[in-house]
Amino acid sequence: MNTNEEKQVPQNENSANDQHNTLTGSNTVKNPDDWTTGDEPMTGAQQSYLKTLSDEAGESFDETLSKSEASKRIDELQHKTGRGLESNQ
View 1 (cartoon, rainbow, N blue to C red):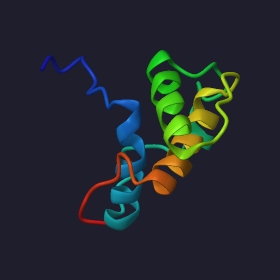
View 2 (tube, rainbow, N blue to C red):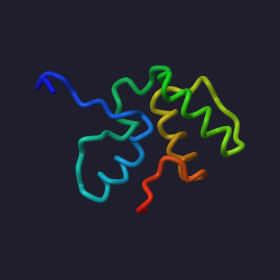
View 3 (cartoon, one colour):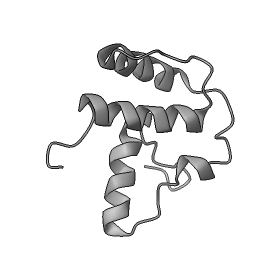
């Protein structure tokens, strides 16, 4: 990897990373409330994954969420459905 490139973390991995960082004390992944672009519309990947999780959870899908709101909603629905959570938790 070029030293000028940043490692891209897929959106659906943020929840597991946040939980890992809480346990390890790492601060390499920011809380969605602290994202500088958190008020922008959710990404296509977030929208697709959130739609899937909403359907599986039997809950409504809000396509107007911001990036940070979508990340938090994904985290909530992952806990509800068990999807996307590491198996050792």
